[in-house]
Structures are given as structure tokens and as C-alpha cells.
Image (tube, rainbow, N blue to C red; front, side):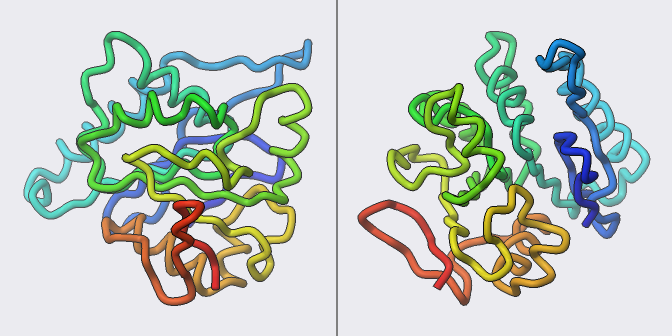
Length: 215
């Protein structure tokens, strides 16, 4: 897997079979005024790349598994894409979608995640100690990626990594963090290869919070 750079750039990654996390699109760049420049063509670019891959590998069409991981603030862009009236369930091509450390409003996420009805599974990773999202909450409402209350979307399976080995206050859970935590690594390996990510060994389900937790 190819993690984002240390610069804090956000991305949408797509895993193609036996290729690793090789398609990286949707980079956010910090604007001079401290805002964000968002390339509103990123969704088309991502789907274009997928289409190109499929067109170049027609014999694999029935066997490939396409899985999407959306990291950090890229979830905001993804939310806007799903909410757009022109959205026509393009996400149906994905087996799994992971809303990873999602920097989006917690309270409204059930509304737009219901639009992901054709993906086999949708996951959201959570770390209550996430240093980046805790800062984001200073100027925003509660974030999906660092809150274990209000987890009520019927389409999302929630995975709480808080206090997991080597997770600490990190905002990035794959790459080096996954290598140091076998349960986190197993989760990402499964979902990014089209398998069910939860439940897995090393997790337990908290019925009160509707979330899978690291044991």
C-alpha cells in the first residue's frame, strides 16, 4: 500500500487487483489564504482511470475487485459528489468503500452515506484521539472520524481504532501504523481486496455504540 505523503495531502485511492494502491487522485493543496483548492474534476478523473484499467484488461472484468479508500478531508469532496443531483450511483463498481479518518460533519453523514447503497460494504474508521481531527473540531462540528457517538447510518460499518497499538493520536492508519498493528493491517488487507473487513480477530462489537472496537 502507498500511504499519503508526510505533507498532509489528502487523496482518494483505488486498489486494482495485484497492483497495490497505485492510483492516487484527488490531491488537496493548501491555498495561500489558508483555504483549500478543490479540483472538482477529481471524481471524473478517478472513474476515468478505472475505466481505462478495465478497458485494458477486458478478460479480467468478471474477476477484478475494485475498492475505494477516501482519506481525511477528501471525504468532504466525496460527500459533495454523492450529494450532487447528477450523481447516478457511479460508486456501484466498488465492492468496499472506506471513509478513512473522515473530516466531515458527523450529524449529517447518515443522509449522504445512504446514497452508497450499491457498494457491498461501507466502512468508517475512527480514532477519538486523532490530532488532526481534534483541531478540525475547533472550527467545525463533531467529525465522523473521531467520534464514537451518533454512529447511526444503516449503510456504514464503524471501526474504532482508539487506543490501538501504535495508533495513538495518528491521523493515518495504514502504512506504518498498519504494519505495527496486525488487526489494523488485516482490516485494510481484507477490504482493499474485496473481502469483508469486519468482524475480524482482534475486534469486538459494542452494541451500545454500534461500533467494532479493537480488543
